[in-house]
Amino acid sequence: MDDEEDIVRPKDWTQRDIDALSIEQLEEYIAELKVEIARVEADIAAKKSHASAAEAFFKN
Image (tube, rainbow, N blue to C red; front, side):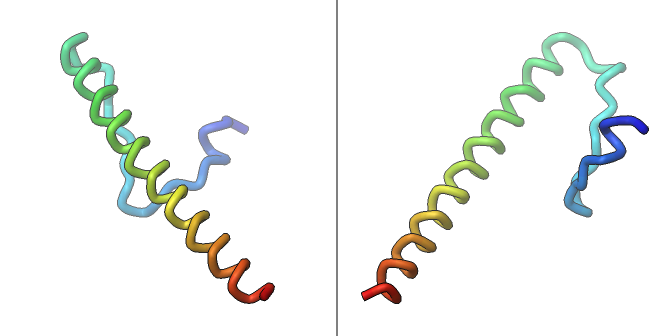
């Protein structure tokens, strides 16, 4: 079984065909992905913060 088959992806996510992209287009794609990763990491941090605050509230 392929490792890619084990990955659960959101339904609105589609893998981009990179074979036809130029080097410049690939670099732009990487930049877009880095922005998206930063956005998701910020959301994770916010959710962890909210969870910690809720946990602290209910422990007292």
